Amino acid sequence: MNAAVTRTLTRSLPLVALGVIYAILSVAFLSTQVVPWIKKDVEAFWSGLFIFGPPVALIYGLEFFWFFVLSSVAFWGFIGGSMFSKNPSRKLLLRVCAAVIWCLSGFISIGIMV
Image (cartoon, rainbow, N blue to C red; front, side, top):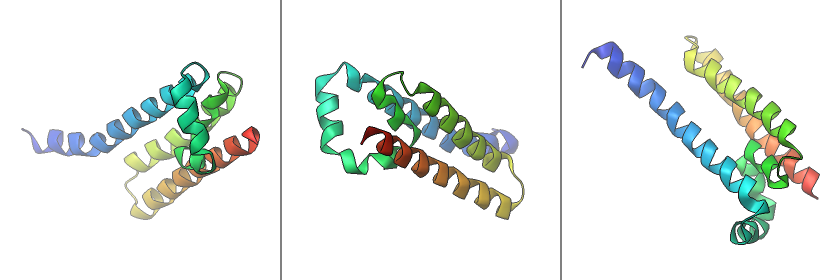
């Protein structure tokens, strides 16, 4: 395999894994409205839901879909920027911003729930 292809694959693999986890969390939180056992598990872990970031807003169904989209665009924008940045300090700054958006959107979603 070509070295450039290998470098591209290893660089995009964490992004793909993050995308899959993000999609699974989004579907799980959206389905809390219709699947009783997921809703029970979510309610048991209520105080720690902020660690799941933007998908937490989907617990309300589509009522706060706008917040999910807004925080997702910000999160993925920072992640995408960090993946393509050549400057190490800028890459770190963008990743920190993505982590802040992730936690902040989870906290805001929890605040809406209370």
